[in-house]
Structures are given as structure tokens and as C-alpha cells.
Amino acid sequence: MEKDIKAVLSWFESEPSLWVSIVTGEGRAFCAGADLKAWNDDQKQGTIAEQERVLTSLHGFGAISRRRGSIKPMIAAVNGGAYGGGVEMILNCDLVVASDKAQFALSEVKRGVVAIQGVIPRLAKIAGHQLASELLLLGNTVSANEALTKFRFVNMVVPHSELLPAVINLAQQICQNSPDSVQSTKKGLLLSQSHSYEETVQSHALSLESKRVYNGSNIKEGLKAFVEKRAPVWGNPAKL
Image (tube, rainbow, N blue to C red; front, side, top):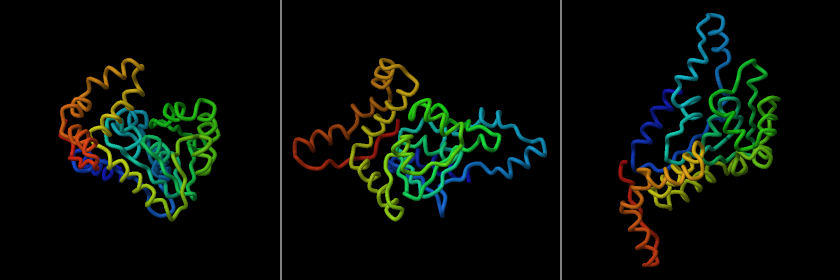
């Protein structure tokens, strides 16, 4: 499945007419995490090389948890249980909408393994050291409302039947904005995670994404539409 997700996301990234992606699960779970039975078999056979796997994994768990270079927004629609690697995937999405039936757990410590595909530094920044420690060191399951109000890695919780309409509505709102501006803004957000304030400003201003904004057709359309008091008609962003 990871290979399939990687292939779909590679296609999404290369297709200029696709501006936003939505990731969700099927059935009762968003993602149950790693296959622990297969992991156990690997341990028995002496074929496990988890440290090397982590170091060589370009995009992390589910081809999403460490996917850092994408400048197109990704929205998680959490339809049910998200455990282990499922939470790692969610925390690398730009917006997270959860069903009121969703549950979350980073229970790796209960199985003798480690949440090592990117969630530890990200959760520490979002929730703070103490709350991140609560999730990671206790390994307990938390509700969607706790993920929203206490741990703060969920943007909104909606009734289960309204999940996909709510997420599609968010995607449509993003698509009402200039794709050049949206992608440049996300570039700035990504830079802020690894650069100082001034470095972020400088690197963002000099980025190819910003250059495309100020030299592209969408900035002209946006300003012209404002003067003419009409909704802008955006074009697909030019390839970088």
C-alpha cells in the first residue's frame, strides 16, 4: 500500500491542475499503524533492520509522515482510529479534520518499539514537551476532542456523517485562492520549521515559489479582479 500511496502522491505533485490532496481511511480506521505481526516475523527471522529502514525512508511511514518537500496542501480526514504510524502521517498534514468517532494513540512503547518516523519532534513543537510526553510515554488512547483541545494537532471535530463534506469544503476554500500564493505560503511555513526568523524571511523571498508568484499571471489576475470587483479566475501554476 505504501508504494501505491507514493505513486499517487508523485502523480499529484507533478500534475499542475491538482492543487490540494485529501487523505482518509476506509472502514472503521484511518490507519492502524505498522503491521506488528510481520514485524514479529522479521524479528524471528533476523531480517529486521529498522534503523536502516528509517534512515533510508525518504517520505516516512505511509509515504507521508516525513514528506517534507511538498508545497501543495494535504488535508487529513480522520474517519476512525489512528494509531502509531497513522498519527505520524496525520501530524505531517497541513490541516486535520476528525470524525467524532476518531481515536488517536502513539502506543509504540507498549509494544517495545519507538515512534521514530517524524512524530516526536513535530508533536513536541505542536503540543509542548509535557503534553507530547503524555502521549508518547504513556501510550494511551485519546479522543478526537482531546486531540483538538488538549494536544492541538486536530483543526476541527465534526459528526462522523459530515466528515468528508467538511474536508471537501476546506479543500474548495483553498482552491478559491491563488495556487501560486498558496504554494509559496506553504513553502514559507516549511522553511520556518528549520530556519530562524530572518533566515526564513530571506529564503522565502528568494525562493522559486515566490519568484513564480511575482512573475506569474495569477498575481495580475488577482489584482485586476480586485479593481474590477469580481472573483478572480486562477490559472494552474507554472512548473518551477
